Amino acid sequence: MGLEINYGKCHGSVATFPKLKQFAVSTSDAGLIILGSPVGSAGFSRAKATDLCASATNFCKKLAQLKNPQVGLALLRYCCGVCKVLHLMRTVPSSLLQHELETLDNLMVETLQEVVGMSLTANAKEQVFLGLKYGGLGIRKSLTLAPIAYATSTATFLTRGIPYLALPDSLLPRRDEWLRVCADLKDVVPPSAAQAYNWMRDLSHPFTDHPEFTSLNWWSVQVQIHQYASLVDASHARDKARLHCLRGDFAGAWLEPCPMVPIGLSLGPSEFSVLMKWWLGLAILPVVSTPPCPLCGDCMDAFGDHLLTCRKAGLYTRHQAIVELLWHLATAAGIAVYTEVGLPSRGRRISYCPIGGAEVHLPWTLQLLTR
Image (cartoon, rainbow, N blue to C red; front, side, top):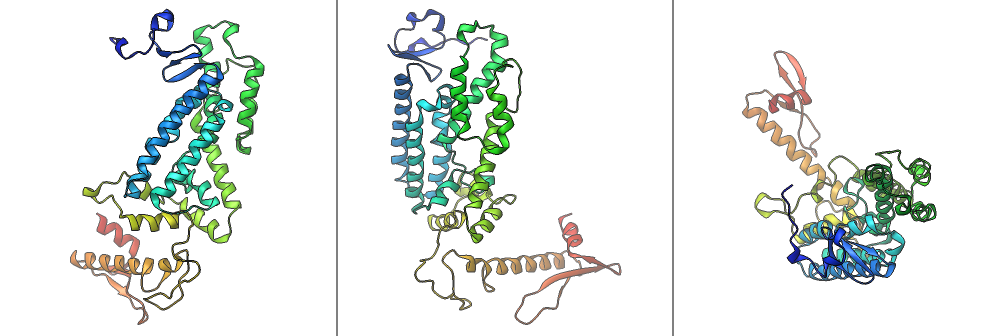
């Protein structure tokens, strides 16, 4: 392929392993590092995981010094956590990484609280580890993902690698070793994946491939759906409704783009903090004293629901502004649009547009304006 190994970047003596010198990057008495993954004793693997967690700790300490929570969250999601240890989780049994991964998950939550400047409740901490389309923040929980990553990686090797590599039986995982892997996996298996788990445990078909059951993404989706359902079941009525709304199409679109000030994809620290509190179901106003609304005089609530439903602000005002904009656009285009007659306390609404003697309703008018 025209590729060459740069031995100047290799650590240790690669001559010790002549057959592995094209892969080995560092060696020690207890094991060696191959493509970033430790191969050797349990203590050697734990030491490698500890080093990665230490690197993540240093990163998080620097991240907490940022004054921009939107940038901080983006860096925390894409540059720390699971992305730093995924290769370890695929190649090292999760039982050897238990303490290190738990430390990493706690570190992610603590850093998030410092970056956004708020204290998270127990339910909010669970919500943080959900994907964006499940109402979370897209931060993956490494302690839950590790058993799945190792099991699917090993299952892929058993079903696809062995037939091509023609390995001797002495190099294949023993049944008792594989059952220990499945035992770790069982702790995170949702009910919807019971059939996949039974398929995993059965070693009578080591050469029968099943692309779905050996897919890390497929298992992750099943776990996410189960975690979301469990969170909803443990929530009260208001949070159930909120979590349901968060699963709407494009509900989490404001969290997806990387913040870019020149094109308007940025939020100020106070704006981002308020949105984050509402997204996670945290109190926006002091719970002990909720002042009256300065616009309508009604009593406001700590979670900010009144701010969205106030007749003199919030969603209603934006709705009326859109109606006014459509009316002006239609009028400027020469379309005879008029608004329905409303009560004195209400604004105008576009009702229909008479064209050629026929009453064309608003959806058709919008299509016409779009064209």
